[in-house]
Length: 150
Image (cartoon, rainbow, N blue to C red; front, side):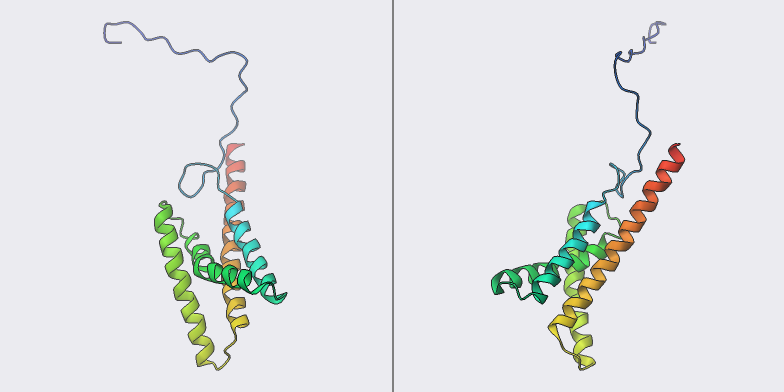
C-alpha cells in the first residue's frame, strides 16, 4: 500500500485439508505436551527394580542402577518445574538426583535401617510419584485444550 495499491492476499491452494483445531502446547510452548517422558520414567523404574529383584547379570545391573540413580529421580522432579532450557533441566536433574540419593542414604543411616534395596525402592518411588504427577498434569492440560478448542 505504499503507492496506494492494495496487495492481493495469497490464495489458499485448493484440495488442502481443513485445519485441525489447535492442540494444547507443551511446557515450552513449542508443541503438544509429550506423554512419553513420564511413561519412560515409570518403565525405567520398573526395569531397574526388576533387574535388582530378579538378580540380573551383575555388570548390567550395576550399570543400570547407577545410571538410573544418577539421572532419573532428579530429572523426574525437575520436569515438574517445566524449565524451557533442556541443558539446565538435565544439569539440575543430575544434581538433584545425587542430592536425593545422599539424603536417602543419610536418613537410612540415621534411622539404622541401612539397605541398598530400601534406598533404591525409595528413589524409584520418588521418581514414579513425580512422573505420575507430570502425567496427570499433561492429561489435564490436553483435556483442557480439547474443551477450549471445541
